Length: 546
Ligand code: TXA
Ligand code: MG
Figure 1 (cartoon, rainbow, N blue to C red):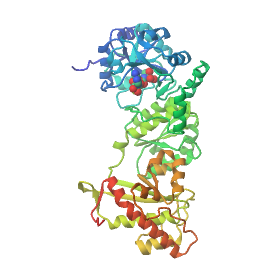
Figure 2 (figure 1 turned 90 degrees about the horizontal axis):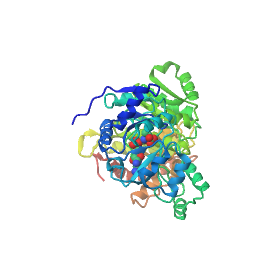
Figure 3 (figure 1 turned 180 degrees about the vertical axis):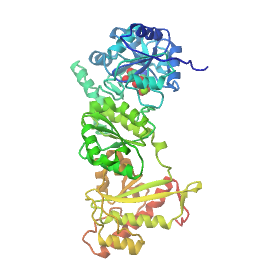
Figure 4 (figure 1 turned 90 degrees about the vertical axis):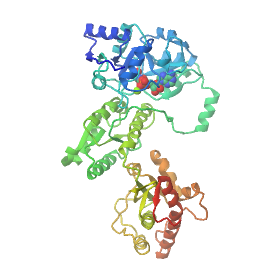
């Protein structure tokens, strides 16, 4: 059946007739774009399965995801759910109306297509006055997902909804910019303690506080689990399909704002050099100003979306989706946004941003036939330059490299090095340069030391450290890249290779022989692990004598 075509109308609450028509359309089983304080929703009568089917059709996604049911008063809630647990009651009392969705056991009036077959339903009472009036006027509970087309970021302005839903639905109700800008916190309250399924503006700390005030104690089993998990990552691997603009999204920094000017500067410089322009920057006012000053003659290549105060996570969250959309529409090739500390609203902000950054990676990344390896030591003048030269030499020995099963596709490797305490542009030590030249036929005399930066790590496929102290340090300081970081020792152990010591001591201050010993150790390590690494990447060496 073909989808109905509508002459989509944008109505305001001041337009009484238009607003009433939108409310009536909801009641009669049509789909209406609705503002809320989080993001715009695509609303329909929650009790009407045919209306629910139209929502999925309009969004362009299959009906495998449960919809949230929106109400305009707390009195409606008991008619929609089977049970309100003590935890659910506290959350409803404390945070509704507001940016929270509380999951409870559903009552039979909620059709299976709303709950996607689950026996629970998420209930949300938005605080946005226009949402409340619309739901009230419709006289029905309103099931609504976010009003974006499947694949684009959630809409935070009526014009986003108009753009995505034009012709697909009869009405969009204007409600201004969404105040929060990120979707509601989704919390399962069917048990004796809340479980967050999607982070949002209402945080777990706020919930714990409300529960404590209501005399509800954290269960012993949860306490024990928390202790065991320690500082485990907070947002579990949830399955989202939204939030993703089509250009590549990269996260800058690690939330401390220590070197953000540097990160932005480095990022812009590099992308302009690589001719990946225009470069899109989602950025605070102050850093935007600095970038504009620094790159005064390159402003044609940079697109700015300024979210407000650099350190204000509320403003960044409020503008995130709008920023992603705008920079994407202006055809940024690559887009940078800052990391915020993962606490409070920062958890939800980072959750959405990471999603945007990972979602489009597969299409944005170059073919998997090119890989980057970074060697890391302390000063980046002795050990890591040697490793760099040696790996290049070993790669050359094995040439040509192709992709597994695709002998026509050439495999490429880029090898560089950096140091955790390195300063910019110091010369590599003389013996490292000489050994590279005499023993490995590699010229590294024109390379200089560089410090490790978060952004640099982001670009790598594999980060190899000369000692386990270095790998521990990198994983702690740059958690985002931790899965790519190994020490020589760790990668030997992971591949069950014995008989070689993976910890490479600093030869600095030693003589040629000392450096030669260091080089032999690194060579032995790399010869042992390289075949394993190539196998993992599905690289095949033509000259494979191992
Ligand atoms: O802020 C919001 O929540 C917005 C506005 C429009 O209210 N709505 C929204 O809906 O973000 P949607 O469909 O894009 O996301 C709903 C999320 C999904 O991740 C879904 O899996 C989860 O809530 N959810 C809904 N009902 C659930 C249930 N019964 N059990 C588990 N998860 C549920
Ligand atoms: Mg959504």
